[in-house]
Length: 404
Image 1 (cartoon, one colour):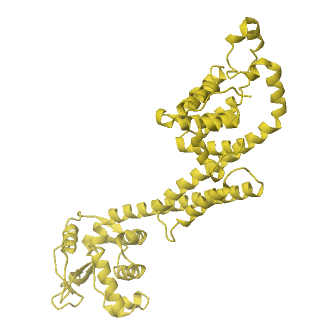
Image 2: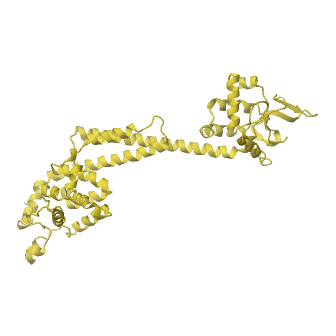
Image 3: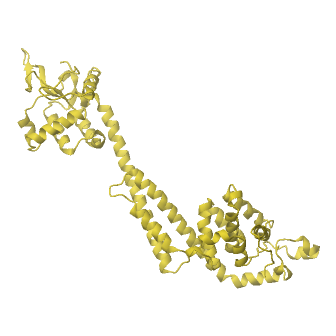
C-alpha cells in the first residue's frame, strides 16, 4: 500500500500548500517505523493549544483511531480508515453531521490526518483475491506516525510551560499575601512611612493582573511585587533600628559626653591630632561614636532629599530615614550595604550620607560601592560626615557653621 502520495480532495474542497507539504512528509516515513496510536493521541491532546484544535476535534480523532484495528500505527499494515459519517458520529458520542465535517476539516488543517478520496468521494476498501485490503479510500493516519516525535516534544514543552505557570502563579500569590499583610501590620501599629503611597503601588500591581494571564505577565508582576516586598521590609527594619536608637539615646549621650567634653563643640569629632598626644590616648576607645549633626544642617546641605520624604517634606529624623530608604533603592544601593552603614555610622548618619550621595549623584558612578567605602573608612575612624556636609553647604551657597 502506497502512503504519502500527493492526492487532492473530492468535489469543491480546496487543498493548501501546507497540506501538500504534509503529504510529502508522510512519504518520507522510514520503513518499519511504528508508534503506539494512543500515546500519539495523548501527545496531540496535550499539545492541542499548539496545534490549534479544539476538544471536539480531538474527540473525532479518537473515534477515527478506534477504526484502526491495531494499537500500533505501522505503514506495513496500512494507515487509512474508511468509516462512514454515521459510524463516526456514533463513536464520537452522537456529534451532529455538520459539526463532524467541520472538525474533520480542522484535523486536516492541523496536519493530524489526510484525506484520501476516491474518484466519487466515497470511503471504502478494495480487497484482493485473498481478502486482504489492496487499497483504501478515507482518512489517512500517516501524519500521526510521521509526526510522532514532534508531537511528543510539543507535549513535553506544553507540560513544562504549564508547570512554570503554576509555580509562578503560586509565588505571586504568596508574595501578594506577604505585601498585603505587611502593609496592614505597619498601618495598624503606626510604623513611620508613607504607607498610603505604598498601598497605591500594591493596588496598582494587583490591578495589572489580567483575567487570563500568561507566564510572562505573571513573571513581570512577580518581580515588581518582590521588589515592593523588599522595600517594605527594609522600611520596617529601619523603623526597628530607629526605635532601638531611641531606647539607647540616653546611654549613648552619656558615652559621648564622657569620652571628650571638648570635642562636642567641634565639627570634626574624628580628628585626633589637634588634641595632642595625651588627649589622643584618652580618645582611643575600641569604637568611638560618630557625631550626629543637626537635622537642619543636613537639610540645608542636601535639599534634594526633601522631595522623597512623607508627603514631599522632611520634618524629623524619622522622615529623613524613611526618605533615605526610598533614595537608597533609587540609587541602586543594596539593602546589605545600607544596613552595614546603619550599624557603623548609626541610622541618622547613614540617612544623612544617603542624602549627601543623592546631592552628588551626578558625580558618583557607583553609589553602592561609594557607601561601602565610606562605611569601611568609618569603621577605622578615617571618615567624618562634617567635611562632606561643609562642602555641600559651600556648594549651595550656605555659610558653614559649627554644630551646636
